[in-house]
Image (cartoon, rainbow, N blue to C red; front, side):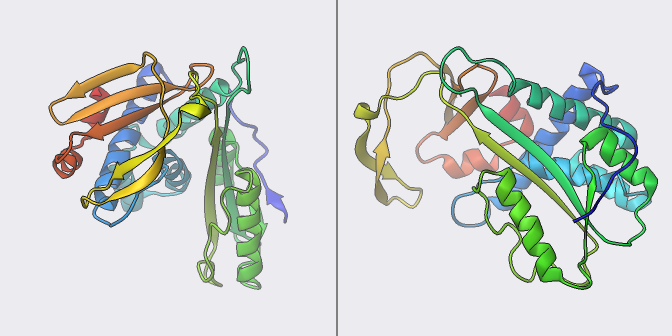
Length: 277
């Protein structure tokens, strides 16, 4: 469909200091752990992208004022206030983007795509000031759909875009019935990440072993193995290690609570504790 964009182009040198960027990251981590604590009460595995949620809601926050803005800032830990928050998100996004452009000596470079899009009702009067903010700090325009006339077609259009941006990994993001004739604005953030390990696992060393679940039962699983040096730390109730991806610009940090202490470790997990690890 049609896209409405501001006449402004994205600010590629945002006016955010290193200190402001650190404050934003700290706030995002606070929110990530708050959300983890809220979601962890549910059964089953938990997989979520707090960065996506923080970014998408920051775009919404840009259009919020008075009590709504104050409440959003409090829950999301947007501690820099309206203007600086958006400048810092832009700086953070550009920093992540630059990492995916780093050359890799052998093998494939990693792919990290973070994309934002807004989907507004055609003919709805969105303010120019708001469209300017989205263009300047998020590089996002607003695509126009007709929720009033055909909410189902609008839903399919958004889902197809998300599928395309995530290399077909995320299908049917918006379930049936989630878009109605009352919808006026939808925000989407898609993250696609694909990378090789700095120290790859050898396929022939993979063996089948018993994986112990929290309820005490075991399930058979493929276990990879290697003997290498990794960043490692341990505390009274956990062990943690860091595995670098090729190019050494990103890593995966794995935290394993000590046997029998999963629930107490999880309940006591804070942003400060996570950062310390």
